[in-house]
Image 1 (cartoon, rainbow, N blue to C red):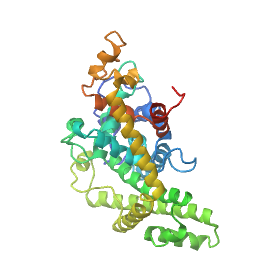
Image 2 (cartoon, protein in one colour):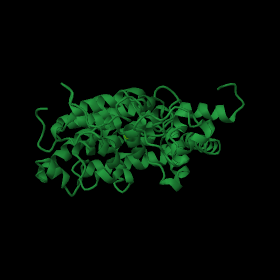
Image 3 (tube, rainbow, N blue to C red):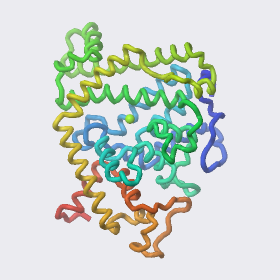
Image 4 (cartoon, helix red, strand yellow):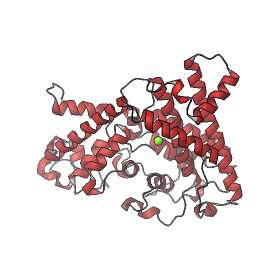
Length: 391
Ligand code: MG
C-alpha cells in the first residue's frame, strides 16, 4: 500500500495468522480479513440484533449491522484522512460488534450474570472466540483465521489484557492507531444515532434537545443555512451536522496529538503514554453532555426498559432450561461439551477437526445464546415455554 503515514500499520508488519497459509496473489492480508468477516454468519446475524432498540420494533432504526456499517464508513474516512491503513481499519470496524449477544447491553448483562461462576461474559472476548473457533466456514481451520492485529482489537476493545484470551497480546504496548480510531468512532456514531432513533420513535422531542449543547450548536448552524426546514428535514440535517462536526474535530485533534508527540513510527505508536486518538476538549465536553441526556432520557425510557426487561427474562429462562435439559440443545452445540456423549452417544458425529471441546456446559450454552438474533431468541422462548405447534 502506498501513501501510508509512518505511524500507520503497514501490511508487511503483520504478525500473521494462527494457521499460516500462502499469501493471496493480489489481496492484502487485511482485505482478506475484511472479506472473511463480511462472509461470516455472525456478521449476517447482526441484522437481527439490537443496537439500543430491539431489532423487531420497526424497520427504520439502527440495528447492530447498520450501526456497524456506519462505524465502518466513518472510520475509513478518518483513516484515509490521517493516512492510516484503511483496510486494517475497515476490518476492525466490521468486526467490532460481531460478538454482541441479542438484546444489546441488557443481553450482555444477563449472560454475564448467568456465567458469573465461569468468568462472566464479555462480547469482545466472545467475538474473538467466534472468529477464532466458532465460525464454521473453512475446511482447513476452525473460525475465520484472522490476522493477529484484527484479533488484538477484540481484546483491546474489551480492555481485557488480563483475561486468558489476552495472553498473546500482552507486552505489545499501546494499541494501534487503526484500532483506536474504530473505538472512538464507534462511540461518536452511537451517541449521534441514538439521538436520531430516539427522535424518530418519539422518545424525546426536538424541544428537549435544545437544552443539549452538542445538539444546539449544530441546530444553530442548520438554522443559519436553512431557516424554514420542516421538523423531519431539520432533525436529519442537525444529526448530519453533529456527526460531521465531531468527525472533523476528531481528525484535527488526533493529527495535532500525533504531531505534538512526534509519532513517526509504529514503535512510537506502541510506546505512546497517552491516547493519541480522541476529540478535542470542546468535543469531549459536548459529547459528555450528549451522553448524560441519552442516559437520562433515552436509555431509561420506559419503552427501552420494557424491551430490556423482556430480553433479560428470555435469555435467563433459556439459559436455565438448557442447563436443566441439555438434550434440548441442537446437536451441533451440545457436541462442543465434553459431557455430550451421555446425551448423544459416542457414535454421533465428532466435532470438526481443530474445534475445542468445553468441559463446562454453561459456557457452551452462553456461546449458543450469544450467537442468537433477538428474533431467534424470542421464537425459541415461545417454542419452549408457550403451548405452540412450532418445532
Ligand atoms: Mg459498536
